Image (cartoon, rainbow, N blue to C red; front, side):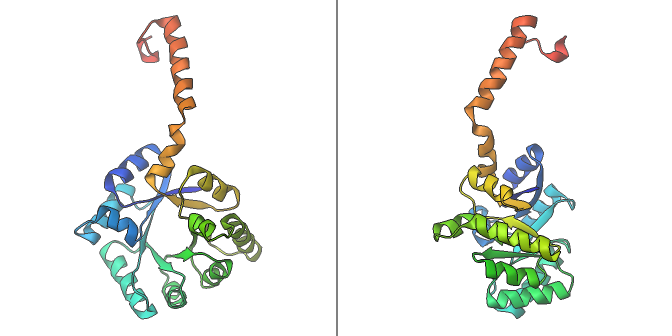
Length: 226
């Protein structure tokens, strides 16, 4: 089970990695726009410094034709490092690019997946991660959890070395369901993951425990003060 942050905000990444079991960071052009770093590659190298090589870093291409997608992938790998997962939207040209990149041994995350057949094509092309867009699929009237479940069955039945990284979330319930239906990983905004801990019952339980402790040992006297 992998929790991945969908942000390039350095402070969010630092805080997220510090507090949560974060397995990596994903980005796309819309995510980059929210932070708008002047030096894109320099900024992504800072992201790598924060998360280290032990966590995955996923960076998306922007071109529409396979040849240029591959060139952009090479530039990303040169400017950041060769461990980056290149995010490629599963368009017709994107699928061709995925095949080329995998033949070169490049890590690939197939993204912008809305349909099970799209996912099957990406799977057969050798993608390391496949990213179905949970909230967007639901908004179109389809069932993203059924897609995740069916895709996971295919991965297991055919023995593919690929992980589902569910994406596009608006709330915690969607994240939980994605895991429950078979996704090995999710990538979600910092605010969505932090929302798990916004439950007032958690704070109340901690306050009640502390009050009971202080009633026995004195106000402000903690375990280290004994």
